[in-house]
Length: 117
Image (tube, rainbow, N blue to C red):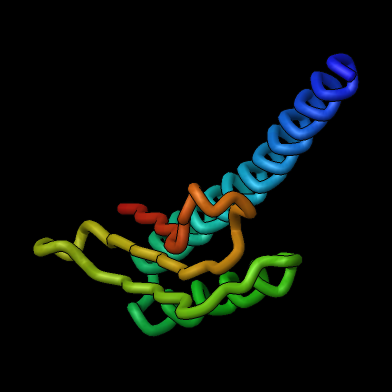
């Protein structure tokens, strides 16, 4: 009976570790995708106007969101701003997510990326 209890405990721990690893890889994918979108948008904002950069960022965000499975994304926000000397373009992209981590103790609800170019 002791062997069975130890086996079940190890099984539960392993399942928890694999679940966390899968959820964390999904989180890092989203973080990298938002960072890439912010970088590309900041680059475009340096050479184009603010509206074109925002439209490009929204297109990339929608494309990225459509490719996600089992993640509910709401309120994608893209803010493009310029520095005082018009030489710096800053882009802030934020999305609210539901059900990213399956563990209740990891309440990640917002993913944000910011880039300056």
